[in-house]
Image 1 (cartoon, each protein chain N blue to C red):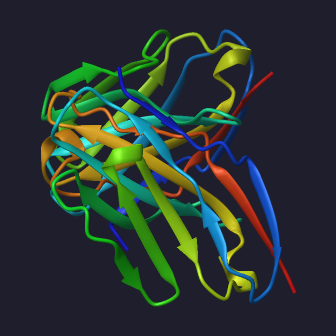
Image 2 (cartoon, rainbow over the protein chains, first blue to last red):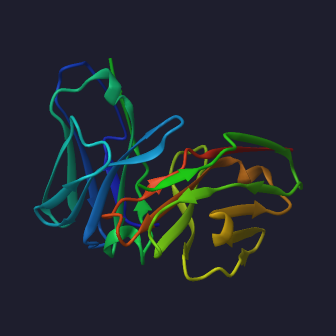
Length: 115
Length: 115
């Protein structure tokens, strides 16, 4: 299994509060990704990183920010959580970019509920 | 824009039956990559296979086989002699060299294998 740890695994919080999810990898992969999974939508890319301090937006980036200060850690922040951000969040990593040559490997997910 | 359609939202079979999961994709790129992932009830995402657009050979891995047909933009997944442990949600995904690191997922097919 790829060495990916997501924390926390479960979180319940209230609307308007800030939330930070952490993804930690031990594979020294350059690329890291944050997805959200919602019924009927599969997984949708929120943000990704292609190196330390290098990040870019994905398909559903509004309301989210990310940071990567170290190769091994990629943080996803909801500055002011809303109920529409209730979802399961997955972190993924890959050696090469574009997801092309190497598959992305996923963490176990974080279930986030915003009341 | 890229798109992946998994028209079957849910399939139920009895153990030992063969089952095919359909995946139809859309992309304007000539170089692209297709993936299948499995999400068992425990929730993690498991990489199954990657196929590039230049390789139309079908692939078999044990009870699993994949049929890639560019003419119909399909990348179907067949499980032979299904087992209860095959019960999961299966996702088809697509990326390309012009996709900007975005992996586009289908909505998933939930497979239930009954004993």
